[in-house]
Amino acid sequence: MTTPVIERDVQPLRKTKPIAIEVKGISKSYDGKKVLDDVSVGVEKGTITSFIGPNGAGKSTLISLMSRLTKKDTGQVLVDGKEIDSFQSRELAKKVSILKQANNINIRLTIRELVSFGRFPYSQNRLSKEDWLHVDDAIDYMSLREMQDKYLDQLSGGQRQRAYIAMVLAQDTDYIILDEPLNNLDMKHSVSIMKTLRNLVDKRGKTILLVVHDINFASCYSDNIVAMKDGRIVEEGACHDIINPQSLRTIYDMDIAIEEVNSNRICVYFT
Image (cartoon, rainbow, N blue to C red; front, side, top):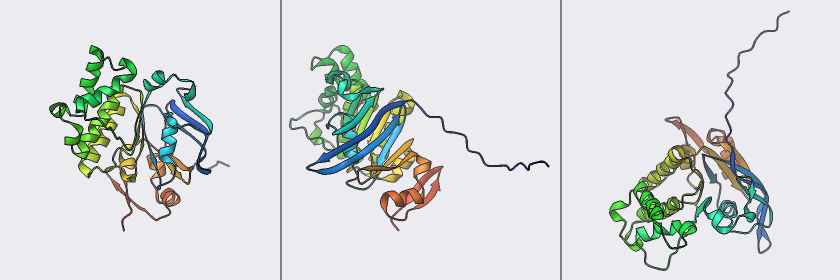
């Protein structure tokens, strides 16, 4: 007797990339309250990974630990397979750059002066010709050339954010961590920033981690998504694996419809 052949719609296996930054069993508490609880995750090289989830989920704390801005209680953070605590500060600053959510600089700076700060791990404030080439490249990449001599307090929110990202680009690290880079930006500037980040990955081979609240930006521009809730990772994977009604209900405790637009999954959560 011949066994019938059942044809299936087989999806090709997604090729995984090497791990850039890996977190193993990280926990963190503040004043006796646990904000991260045994978190493990790996970020692939050459991708955009978006961290999403409700307020208080632990996203900003996690990426702060992944850049060594915050000290972990337990667990490991590995950068290119090396424990992050074993790096010298200048060595780590040449591998990983971070832009925090709040950037308060108390001195009056021009865009060009701000961007030059990104070269500190290399120059220690004595910029060489090569350092200034990196500064110029970052200013041009973020379309800031015509306003490079303006002071930060003369800029719009979108222009100021582009200047801070240019500072990070001048640092010329393989791994870039951004904590809510779209915060307080309008739609036009948010789209511009996300397109720039996508180009940095696709054309310059950077690896970008970012915390983002608008799940549609995460869906349209990311390769992978890590979803957090109550200090734990509840979902992680490729965008199309996470952007579905079941996963989003687990993350946000609400029903979210999904529409397909230009091969992107758009979340309709305002009805």
